[in-house]
Length: 287
Image 1 (cartoon, rainbow, N blue to C red):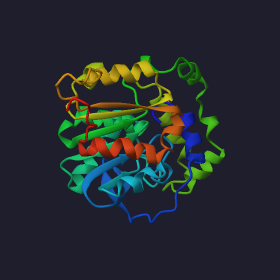
Image 2 (cartoon, rainbow, N blue to C red; image 1 turned 135 degrees about the vertical axis):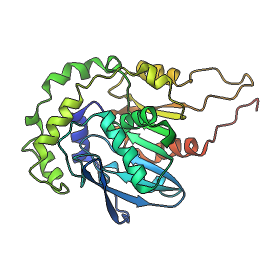
Image 3 (cartoon, one colour; image 1 turned 90 degrees about the vertical axis):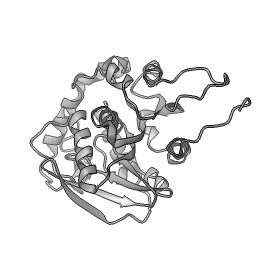
């Protein structure tokens, strides 16, 4: 994810890798690491950012769906997949700066972004720290303040220890792609530390200029109230049908959907993300 490493680890083991023709992988030096990424499709550029403990394959079917109409740049973050780890904490700000540096290296002045969980929060920070680089941002399962997390999640945090992951099948899966097969514990420790990084970005989120599509499950790790509050910070939550254009930011709540179930619904995600990226708005009766 985003703020739930255990769920992210379960997702890594459980998400099926779909049978599709993967593009040739590429590597680029970014902020002292060798970042792995894949490019697929044709059209306007779209950067895809995965969640914690994930990689490009475990994002499932959403990447090939988006590649039908976009030139998709799917990245693997520090210490994830085939990207090397470096002697630096994993923070949302660092991840956002890595994406910005990647865009410079790839010659992308501006791109749309879709991020899930940890990748979605990194996308928020990218829009905050590098606003000139983000066209539209679709962010799934995100939060901007720890106060918005579910009480059960907060209660679970003290149970997050490296032994939940080290020496388990999660490590076996990670080793299959990792440049340093012995570096798993170091990455786990950084991701656990990420769970305790301060998050209180109300003013920064309210200042985001890019249109944002927020996607959340109705049983996600952040509360529904928090998702609505974030939507309002972005200018949403007004009444339509009064002759005024709707705000460009949007909110979508997926029914009967937990945090890890969000990314597995590729068709539903695509049906939400694609019209948003195209700037399409459903027509009301009075238009």
